[in-house]
Image (cartoon, rainbow over all chains, first blue to last red; front, side, top):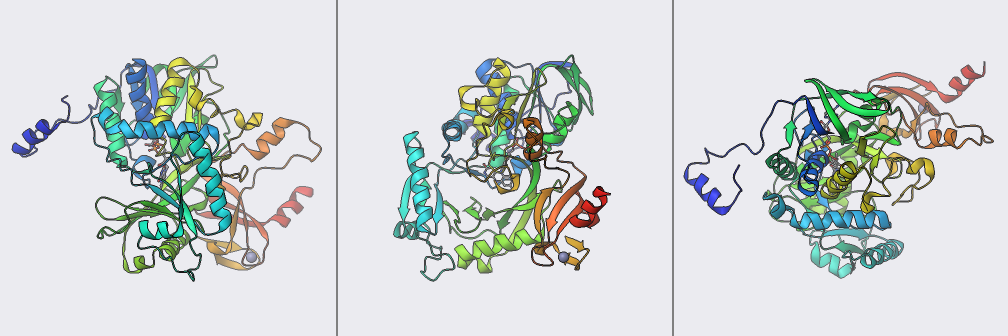
Length: 419
Length: 91
Ligand SMILES: Cc1cc2nc3c(=O)[nH]c(=O)nc-3n(C[C@H](O)[C@H](O)[C@H](O)COP(=O)(O)OP(=O)(O)OC[C@H]3O[C@@H](n4cnc5c(N)ncnc54)[C@H](O)[C@@H]3O)c2cc1C
Ligand SMILES: [Zn+2]
């Protein structure tokens, strides 16, 4: 398979783009592998890629029940940032940010990573103080953050309602300039192609239906296309984490599955050239390269596997958007959809060993797992390859809830729908 | 989604506040087994299918209800007042 380059592009353009080769193979599953990754979302694919690239392990299969990137990977609002305050999170997400900055080159695949900045609005002096605290914590850890006053917010986001009689007047905000957005599908496809090039088998339309466990050790998986033996198995199935782990005999997890919707408007001329989040309600908005406004807000709020949203949230999100940007009132909604997220009890992910030997878990991503894709794959690969977590994910254990080491960035306690 | 409140009748979901898994039973206050508290506070069955859950009729009668809802279809198969349920278990 050839590298993508300008010559390659020109050559294919001259032949009418009829001779592009498929970006990854579609092999039949082999009877056994060294490592099986369950779930072909961003995290599973990135894990396989880094297992091959960083650890030289290539006898690997990624098993996906549908098509790769058909889960949350292809449903998110594509926001990438590393503006976390608790040390475990700060360092992990910042490592992710560094991987994002070189991802297109590394994968030889344009993931359209755009560091257009992420601005969080403040509507009270108390919020400004909280941002100053968070920003300082970030800067102490070597992450970029700047505090913006009201005038600077008005200059950077021309459409925002800055009037003093706005429902929630804006007093300032915080920006992470290196934050931004990326093309989510391209990230899945880029990692898939990169892994495939190194020999990983990506097996779509193959559902894992059980585990083969022998004396407390996992030795393979049962799938809709037959049994596959494996020395190690990594699970990265996002919204279905509870269901898949139950098949391995782990009855309960500190996770609930909840639904989050996302929205895209009809394309309009350039309006918002950064990512803006509302501080008085819940809304985050950016503009795609095609011109559509991409936004989202709260979860539907009750356990769900429905993969489609309900009306009250649509109303709430629309009213938040209008409160921030009154000029959106006449824009039409093009599409909206939902994804099922694995909400952990402290809002922090799990990248961990499990009570079953050689079975590893990657989950609990809540609605922040897109930005984590590279760091998650990188750390999960390390954990699977060496059998022990890397320093960067050492805090993200499954047993932290039981032991009292929860990592609650938001400080709201063990209520998954509040994170 | 609409919930058929035993006191107020069928009302829109937006009148209610979700309060989570209703199968979790809080251990006795004097229970010193950390495992029991861990299970109560953190561990969830998280079923894909029938789910017993609390809803508070915040903008109505303000009663807590136990609703059985399918998490894939949102189809509600039963709604009971919490008080009635407790009466049942005390007998
Ligand atoms: C609407 C929405 C907006 C979001 N916005 C953002 C954002 O702006 N920024 C951000 O950082 N994060 C965001 N997220 C979160 C992010 O998308 C997820 O945390 C992340 O994608 C989860 O990891 P994944 O890519 O591996 O998941 P997925 O893509 O869901 O991958 C899991 C895969 O496992 C497969 N699977 C499940 N069960 C089985 C089985 N039994 N056998 C085989 N395969 C199986 C599924 O089919 C699926 O493809 C958002 C999520 C949603 C839903
Ligand atoms: Zn009522």
